Amino acid sequence: MRLPYLLNPLYRIARRATPERIKPYVRGWYNKLNKFATYGRADIFTALDIETNSRCNLHCSYCPVSMYDRGDHFMPEATFKKVIDDVAAFPFEYKGRISPHFYGDPLLDERLPDLLRYARAKLPKSQIIIHTNGIKLTREAYRALVSAGITGFLITRHLKFGN
Image (cartoon, rainbow, N blue to C red; front, side, top):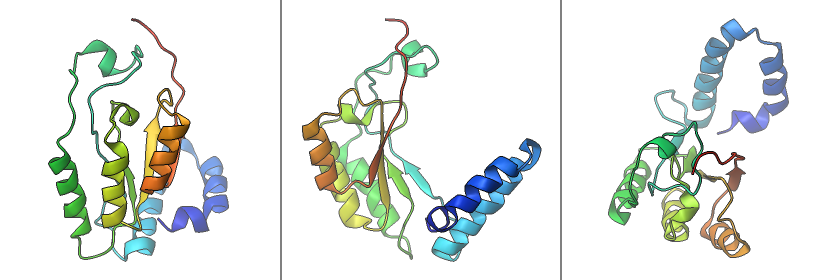
């Protein structure tokens, strides 16, 4: 997306100066403006979160994964590729974020470098961000993901509660 890079200092100042009660409206206007600046239209999503596996290696008390057994499932590779192919078939080039996460930690999926290499080839202008708790982020995993074309990592910090 274009505006966060162009207007980042202005965005931070406005975020602090905007009264809480109108922040949702201002954020909505900002997002619309951002979509227009990037795509020339506002009817497009700017983030695509794809959960490729159902597992997590933490059991945080506030997360549904610790309360419900979701099993050990992986999204079929064909389904992942279909999602990416559908986005690549848009009549304009997708430049938003792609993140392989939701409740499962993406680094528990050993296919991740290959899946993201496919996404990068089909959606070269997208931002591929890995959201992870970082437990499985080794040097080898880091190198494989960077070589697959990811844009960056967002490593969260969670306290382990329960089991």
